[in-house]
Structure formats: structure tokens, C-alpha cells
Length: 238
Ligand code: HEM
Image (cartoon, rainbow, N blue to C red; front, side, top):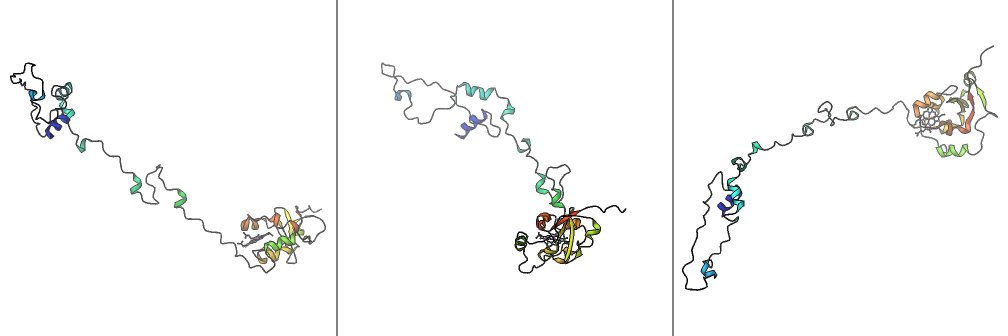
């Protein structure tokens, strides 16, 4: 059976082992019969005891003829490993050292953000000051909307730097932020950064220090009830 399969697969020429010779058809003439009909029963054809399947493909088929004679010898070769297509190259990712670019121009470059050390937090700002009871942000909001006079002036003023300079005491502390002058005195006890820090800009323009400390704080909203006027250039002396 194996020799038959081999002959089927290799088309008759087996490289390693020679196939069994293909049996040739032998014409068996029926034995002389007494039957006048000429004899057509199974017993008469001699097939009654033969359970073997028919040969496939048939011994005289065109398929068999083609496979055994027409194929070139090279088509029967089994490819060895060396003749096969080589496997794809191993991706360089597996041998890449973290933090070191594998190849210039590679799409697998480490993002520059991961190689830079994180920026140091701003340590220039002082710590939050513990506010006295009744001086929290909500208390300040309540005081602002209470209608109490937090300006100390009857009308908005035009304030030159020389005038601003004079308001530098705790009980009379003015400061300019973005061209607007505010009376900081009522806010001193409410400032989360403490009175001391706030007094650093008393009597002068505090825009720069304010922005470098906490640019996200909305001073115009925080001190809207404390507005006293606008910073103007010094009038020219006569
Ligand atoms: C009059 C204008 C100012 C207002 C309305 C104001 C308001 C505030 C507010 C609302 C906070 C809390 C911020 C937060 O929690 O994120 C704060 C914190 C602080 N402020 Fe001011 N501030 C003013 C001016 C200043 C100035 C001139 C300084 C001077 C350096 C200063 C120094 C600080 C500091 C050090 C903190 C620290 C606490 C923190 O880390 O939050 N502030 N300020």
C-alpha cells in the first residue's frame, strides 16, 4: 500500500526507494464453459473472492501516464531547509537598550521627554499660611459682598507712582496689579500666602511678583471691592 501511495505522490519516480513495479494487465481468458450464454456471472469472471479495491488511478489512465512520463526530474525534488526562503529579520526592539536610541531616524526612537529629567517644582514660593478662624476664602467672599467700604476712597483715582509709594503701611497698603491700584489692607488677614508676602509689594507695582508667584489667581476678581484707581505715569514737573 505504501509503495502504491509513493508512486502516486512522486509520479512513479521515488528518490529514496524504488517503488514496487506496477503490475501490468494480464489478459485472463475465461475458462471454457458449458454455459451456452457465454457466461457473465461473477463466479465466471473470477471476482468472487477478490476484495481488494480497484487500482487508482486506473493503470491505463491519462493521469498516470502524465505523471510518470511528462514531469521533469527537478519537479520531484523535496526542498531542503537551505533552499527555503529565509525567515524575516528579528526586530531590533528586542535588543534595544531602554533610553538609548536604536538607530538614527528610527521610528522607535525614545521620546525626548522621557530622557529629560522632570523639571524641579517651584520652591521659591513660601508655604501656605494657616489663616485665623473667620478669614478663609468664603469669609472674604462674604465680606466683599456685604457692602462694607473696602476702598477707603470716595471715587476712583488717577494714581502716579509717587502717590502709590506713600501707601505702604499695613493699615494703608496700596499696590498696583496690571495698571489697577488696590487697597490691600482689608485682604491682608485673608491672604493664603500670609501678610508678610503681601506687604512686599505695598506702595509699588506688584504685577511681576504676583505673576511669578501665582499667575492663575484672578486678582481682579479677588480684589474688585478694593479698587481705588489706576496707575498713571508721573506728571511732568513744571
Ligand atoms: C493682592 C494680591 C494677591 C492676591 C489677591 C493673592 C491671592 C492669593 C491666593 C488666592 C492664594 C492661594 C492660591 C492657591 O491656593 O493656589 C495665594 C497664595 C499665595 N500667595 Fe498670594 N495673593 C496676592 C499677592 C501676593 C503677593 C504679592 C505675594 C508675594 C510673593 C503672594 C504670595 C503668595 C504665596 C507665597 C502663596 C502661597 C501659598 C500657596 O502655595 O498657595 N501673594 N495668594
